[in-house]
Image (cartoon, rainbow, N blue to C red; front, side, top):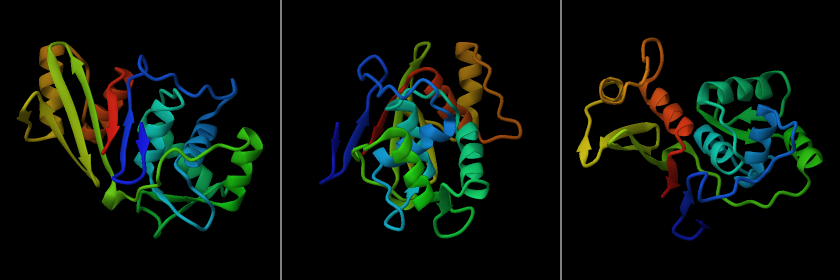
Length: 198
């Protein structure tokens, strides 16, 4: 479901929504370009937070890429190919589609209607929800801050959540040298969590 007034978007789990089937040779860069069009990006008009692009590619388009894969591809698309540009400077986490990127996307995909409103990081809201073993897990993201819940219990940190899931569900969720939030979000993609933008 997507609505613009009051802005509520739901990406249901893969069993409930048929992903838009991209062409067979869809590369990670093409997933990002396709997601950009679905997010309503237009050259020199607007920009979006990277996590919106990533989640649209995961849920709507059926990509199973993790955030680090998307981020590397996005940086290449900015630095080497000029398909995206950094919005408000490098390191903002927000990206705009360039004229070259828009042309590449439409050459490859044709006309793609916008389904979502592009959202900058200060306004970004998403909830990833699913079950791991007997534990109901929610990862609630507001802007660049994420909070993890097991049922109604709010955990102190994403790292604690990873450690508890490793113990209770026998998962391997190493957090040394990486973001524990990102580890959990990647796990959520792998396990087909429901993703909702509210």
